[in-house]
Amino acid sequence: MQSSLSTFKHKMSKGEGKINREMLMLQTNQARGTRASLNQFDTRKRLIVSNKPTLPDLNAKLCSDSEEEEEETVENLTSLTPQAAHHGLPKLLFDLEVEIFARASCFQYWKLNFLNKQFSQLLQSREIFRVRRERGLVQPYVLMFWSGETCWAMFDKGFKNFRQLPEIPSDFCFFSGDKETITAGTHLIVIGREKQSIVVWRYELEINKWIKDTEMITPRVMYASASRGTDAFFAGGIKTGEKGVSNVVNIAERYNSDTKTWKAMKPMHKRRKFSSGCFLRGKFYALGGRDENDEYLTCGESYDEKTDSWKLIPNILKGMTFMNPQSPPLIAVVKDNLYLLETWLNELWVYDINANAWKSLGVVPVKANAALGWGVAFKSVGDRLLVIGASATQSWDNNTMSVYTCCPSPKVEKIIWEETRCDGVKLSHFIRNCCVMLA
Image 1 (tube, rainbow, N blue to C red):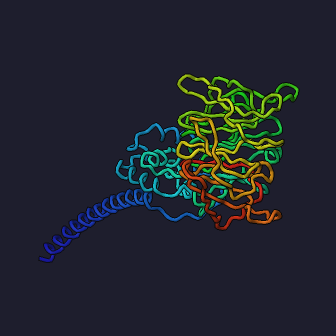
Image 2: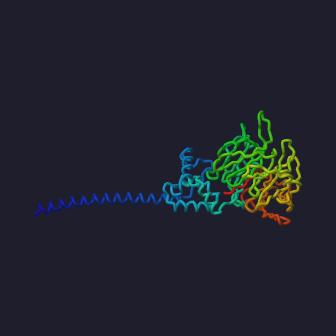
Image 3: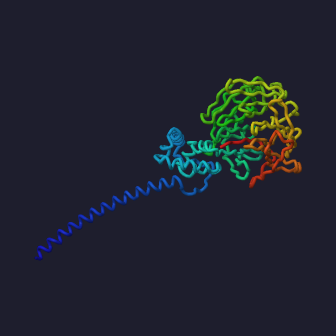
């Protein structure tokens, strides 16, 4: 009896041991599966929510492991379908992610580069900016560089938000000399002279970084320029020839920010420097300036892309007062109407394209004649005109700038200007560069 009971207990003990081992294996497998499932869930959750990042140095390197890896990843991302863009992230989540960030302010985008690599790659793929364009979410941003500063600054159209861009890694010659700016898509193009040659620096909003770009086909300065979409157009200017001799040219070319390439255009009829450019009713215009004999030009030219040809427009600046050293004409286009800040009279003019004549819309609230137009910003921001300069109501020894906007119309007799306050920013008394980016 006792022998039978011992035999039974021994068998039960072996059976329990087998069951316990099987249960332990089952629990281990379940735990592995559960952890894998949670990890997958956490990864997807982090892609959409993530943690609030600590704001690092603006000039710090981005999240990519190397420059080569970053460029290769961005190239692969831009060629992938949305379904595959985020390492297998379902299309619904990818589209939702893009839609959410497309509605965020461009002032916040630079932070995504430091959040994690996937957000950085999403930003550099330009999907967010494509959706902004398609949904009508594009907003104008004012980019300025003023006396006493080493960095460009970015403002929203109401001048309520402000952000300083990283400093251009250039030399003393570049910073101390004249520079010219224009935007092309989400890129800010700054052209100036370094110690060795004329260079092109490109700021990319997607990566919050300056990159030395390819040179112009004919490097030069003091040209007319204007942008439309991802293209920027350049005409005329001063070219430095052999033995340092400067030549006024009629050369024209265009830059595309998508391909980052330059393309030659047909030359203008007139050589001109210190001229101004704009887009008016689908055509690129180069107005005024001085010719190779340093004589002021009252004529302008319009460029037709379809025929790659220029049309000379005589006396388009007839009636404007010129005095040496006059700034390039201060022009801006709102709702297909061309406006001019006549710097000698401190007046706003509107152009009648059919009569080739100008009409005065009253006095502007800044002292544009203080330096014959230099140091004053005059731009179109959406459906409004923007002028930045020393206020006409302040004393001459006041060294701060005032910002004014208006909704212009060629049908009114006098424009009403509204002053805009720049919260937390004190602008210098001299604006060196100003342009508007649509992003």
